Image (cartoon, rainbow, N blue to C red; front, side, top):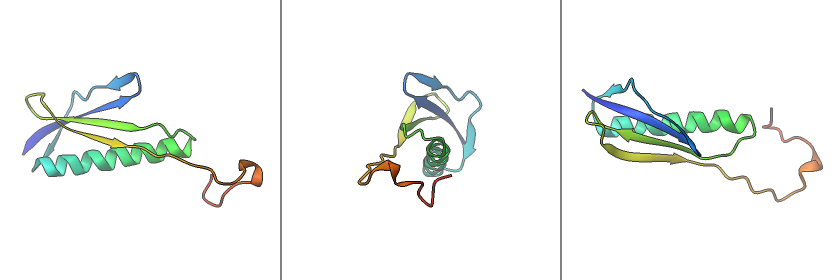
Length: 89
């Protein structure tokens, strides 16, 4: 098992992961980072925040091994004054 760190970047701010998590492979770590980015993005979307989520994955030596980016863009094709959409909270 190898340890990987997930550093979260949010615009000008960043949260460095000092705990790490263990995974059997780099692929598993990347999949976990992608799931985390999607979950964070989903939470932000429910608050009306559509900013990108960036997670940098580091290995046990502190070397950056990949970057996972999740973003969502909403393009309106109707007037927003038409009322709530069925999926809005």
